[in-house]
Length: 232
Image (tube, rainbow, N blue to C red):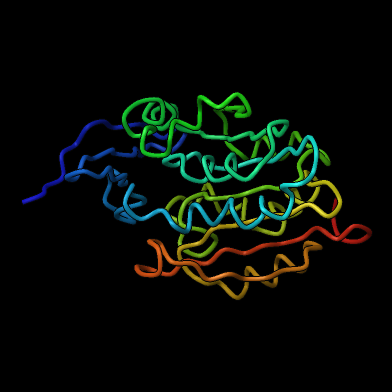
């Protein structure tokens, strides 16, 4: 019988909580130490994390010198999916706040995604993606956010700003005209769609499965920054 085996615990900076990496049979699982929010991710069900990068990156794949930003390294599947779609001259920046998560992705966990941190197109930033967004202006062709459980199911209130009007305005400023913002969420949130439009994005929602054509269904918002209107 499979059981959860704790491999490591990674403190979350400025939070007081921690993430826990477990081995569960042939899979790896990440949970919050406190139990609030339960399981955050696992290596068996990452279809929606793949789609978070595949959908926007396919649309910009033919461009030269593409620059994209991923908020949240997770288990590396979104990063790997972005690299798979983009040209050799692309730069994929990934902002990850928790040093322990970075170390996990350099080891056995990272092997499940093909060790995308080793790709020479990857630019790793050990910082809160909020700080990266605030320091960037018309820098990226696409931004992909997979922070917490999305705009509705937050487990850390620190992440609230990112999905607020102010956070979306920062995303708009960081994007080039016509740039794409992709946001992952464990559930739908109609108010978030409204906030995207108010921030100057034309918006669509895509429902994707966590694992192939089955499992939980997650939501990905795709917002396109308007070239001549909206914040930024």
